Figure 1: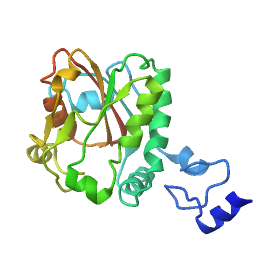
Figure 2: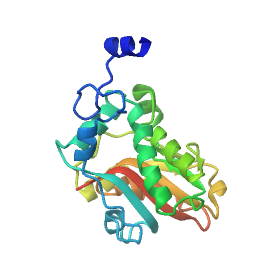
Figure 3: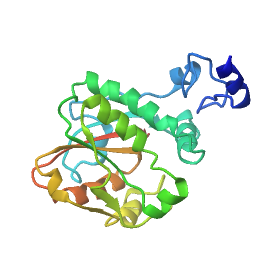
Length: 226
């Protein structure tokens, strides 16, 4: 009864279509969940990120949950997370892909999950890092440590979605740096982000992390641009 009254005052809405959620639904309604363009998670080195980052990042394995296209439901979902501050989306997607990664055998392989960081000014403005819940949920599922104090951001930039790879690289290279990098020596790292487009942000993060000795890198994203 109390929960029904709360739902009347503060309705639970689908993060994709803004329709009311049923009692058994969480974050995304059943219809939208079935319509979301799921990626095929190729764990044998044939994921799209391997192709995007070929020759730029020494990438072991990669996975993305959705394909991102302009004006599709995934764009609405990420917009709801980042700009309407629907933080529940982040952990929900982390639990979703975390189960996929667990079934794919990533459990007990990943030592540390590291989120792509926000600059402290943008963090103050937004109030949270949109990939924090995502990374923490994955870390919990894979029995790994979540660490957000090793990889840091020097500056903040305007969104780079749909810029060319080379234009984006010029902006983001050198924007990241590592702290206490020796703590990553000989570790298997999972770098997590919301959206992969040209791969330049992920490449810049790799450049900051690569000064650690003998590391292995996996990447997981909420979505990848199609």
